[in-house]
Length: 194
Image (cartoon, rainbow, N blue to C red; front, top):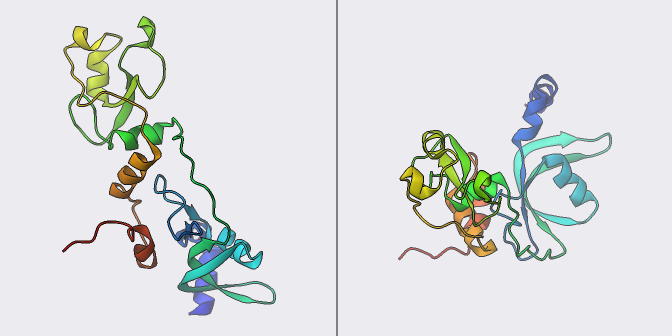
């Protein structure tokens, strides 16, 4: 099995990406949910060797250095607390996350773009308060017109999200793969069901 695992890595270098480590702050909460704080396994092992993290869960697979064998970490905890950012960066991903990955005009999900509520051609700026997620048909329908001119209506007024709101939204949209060893650390502060 061990030899098969190594030859699999050699044949498929992308397989190295299949063992990310969930990174928790010193308080055992993820550094971020949006996107989920993950490190490649190589970074997790390096941080452990440098005594910057504590390994709290591991995959079954191992890797070898010239002198040592390491089980691949699946969850690591930082030894020093990192103060979370209060300001949410204005990025395309964060905009879609704020709008819960749905068009703010019709509610459609899927292939999204973004739209300036007050078009730039009419003095609109690119900011949290003026940009929303929109599907292509609604974006084309609105064009460079105002909401009134286009006949479209917003589901909710755009505004800058707080870091706490983004944490809540991020929990609703986890990445495609969540390893079973992560579950105790991702939702431990969520309200328990009766």
